[in-house]
Image 1 (cartoon, rainbow, N blue to C red):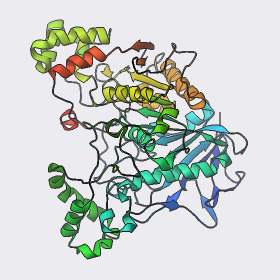
Image 2 (image 1 turned 45 degrees about the horizontal axis):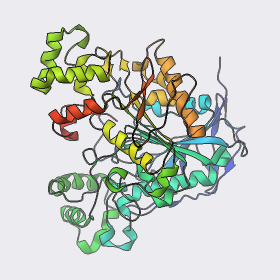
Image 3 (image 1 turned 90 degrees about the horizontal axis):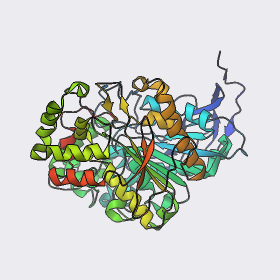
Image 4 (image 1 turned 120 degrees about the vertical axis):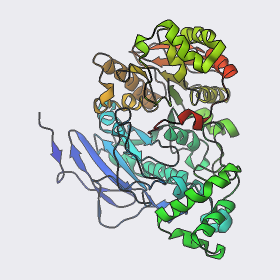
Length: 519
């Protein structure tokens, strides 16, 4: 059946920033590349304003990266690449109606890539069309400043740079303000906004809960594979005097002329930063690249505690089985004999191999014993800690999940970082490796249905899933998303206790050594 496209018939919308012209396609109104703010380099964003009618039919430019993208791992995490510019503060909207009285729930996507990379359209699975249509919600995705553009503290060099160490987060707050002011024009309810993100995007969800200026701009949050801990993303503290001084010296700029950093071509600035920052980082000095704990941003919750408002925001928190298990399979686990499996596992666990195999079998019955080598040690434990911390401050709407699906790739590879994203967006049709007839459709319906219920009510319980109870201080029910979904109580505590008694603490650099990690 031919899908309907309209342009001339679509009305011009008059937002608080200016007039917008989008288009209609296959039942949805789509607006791309809407400027929500403008900012000079290292300075705070201000609300965007424009004259005339702004074309909103093309995605906006994305934040420049410190290093060039290297297309890889496209079967596991299919990507698209886009032109870059530091004036990247834009957002995209998918909606089925322009009726201001519709008051549909609003979901706002915060992309992954840590605080240094990524964009709102980077992954194919980020497309908002299916979520909007099938979930009957308004979908928004945003771009903001990253890396040294979004997170480099120049405050010691002048008041104009106050809070430059959190410019990227200030962009997100400004985007939420724009949504609050204007989303009713797109059929959305400004009083029912859910922010959600994966990896760095998940960290941003938790971070926004720690920023007073964001209070009231969102009402629920989904954190996917993104609870920060010191082992994953150390806190940024101190100030930027040393790193900025090193940059000035490298670029041949006098300290009295620090404003020249605003006009150095970005890639020259990035090259200088990559040259001088490692030595400072090695000494434990501040080099930016992540939000700065200060009066504006109260620091990540596990390191600094939760602000009071966190007790009022329903939160879903989840991880996948093998977060950073991107490396190619070195063996076919389905053909291994038990002695061969013991030998492979023994290279990591030595004399404790049989003990670890027994604990793993109890924790993940039915999984291949060698999968214990890929159990996530980066995200799951901090996620459980955050869930309990939220429960402790009186939050009665905190829900945990664990995505443990195996894919028909490299001998039934266990779920990897980003592999749950297509299911939450209802975009498995866009990700080839998800092609598992009779399995994908069922699980996608369950995950998507749970998320949409959460978006609408703050509770993810869904008729096609087992009862999903909230986390308490003492109990952590976890929804297992797999070929057969089930809820299990504190099911992996003993396994992690055993692993932690054998292996050294988690280290991101060691975890990803030799792997092509693609966000």
